[in-house]
Picture 1 (cartoon, one colour):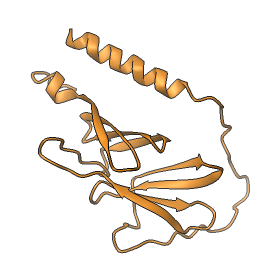
Picture 2: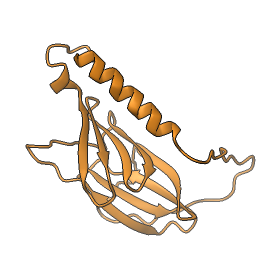
Picture 3: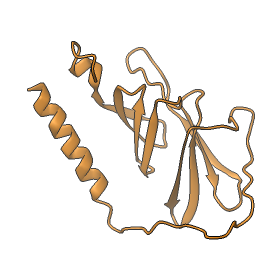
Picture 4: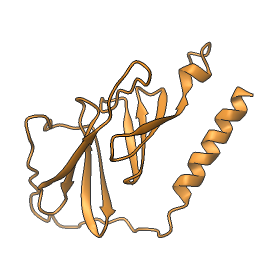
Length: 147
């Protein structure tokens, strides 16, 4: 039964990712277009492992996941100015640790940010800072450490 839940979760995730109404082409540049400079504050590191460029409400935004405090910083891609920031609280009931090298995220929409925490938990977050656990591998497979 646990394996069925795992397969159903994967099918659901595949369906969510494939439901985007319009396909976007990949942008690339044959010639260097100049330097992009982003304004960093004291909490934003100059080296981040996880970034994603997304178009939201007609603007190109760069989502950067900081390795400190489960924090996202969002920049306007062309001006380099910080647009917003949000974070996800960590608690004993719902432990989340994202932003380190072996974690990651996929920004689908402002209310659908898929996050992998410590390689073993999948969360669905929103820019409001709310999140839900989608799948917790160690809880679902407590005796199988090969995952």
